[in-house]
Image 1 (cartoon, rainbow, N blue to C red):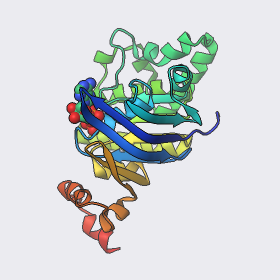
Image 2 (cartoon, protein in one colour):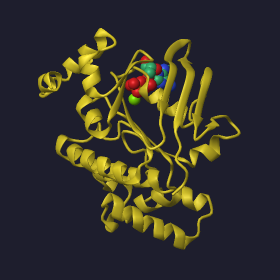
Image 3 (cartoon, rainbow, N blue to C red):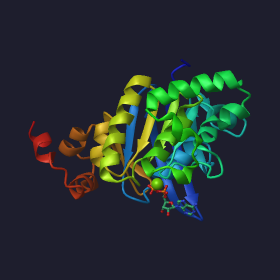
Length: 254
Ligand code: ADP
Ligand code: MG
């Protein structure tokens, strides 16, 4: 396994057409920790992930991954250490699932045998039936697409996983199966994980620690219990209440 790698954000800002979308003073994810990033639609979650993975350049500030600052000269090397999954999977429609998974490894010059061996490991880990590998993304269900997208993100054995609402588009039963699987995969692999969701129950199930965002800023970070008991801002309480968690009363009492 490669070296553990954390993520550090310092003084990071990003505007679109003069409108500030992200303004984070500091946010760090320790190596091998899982942090869930929650907040309402439009609060800047995807922007933050795109900045970390180097798909966007910040107006100011820095992103450091595995001790190396993200810049044009380090971008490609750092991207190979990060796996990224988005809501709809982001699979290339003209490639089969298997080719989607192997694409970067082929580009990087891996031998066929090494690719095949890695695919075997991942099939076992993600419990994907081998027959799905020859299908195109449109021939897969939403849940299958997200499993394939996860497999693709894990192919290069990245230190860091960035997941941008990977389960949001799925129906509740499939979603709950995949929540369980993701948690199992994270526990087993012990990678550095930043998991974006707007669902607070999902966040608390997947990660021990949550960071809640609003209007481009991180308002508070802590366990769900911390956010419930000691909200740093009235919005934290509003956001949690709005989700009508059945066990909020219990959590607050114990
Ligand atoms: P979230 O993922 O939390 O829903 P985003 O990071 O996608 O939020 O968006 C943050 C803000 O930036 C929103 O107001 C959104 O409309 C705006 N935004 C995002 N991407 C773009 C873009 N490419 N051009 C202009 N505005 C954008
Ligand atoms: Mg988003």
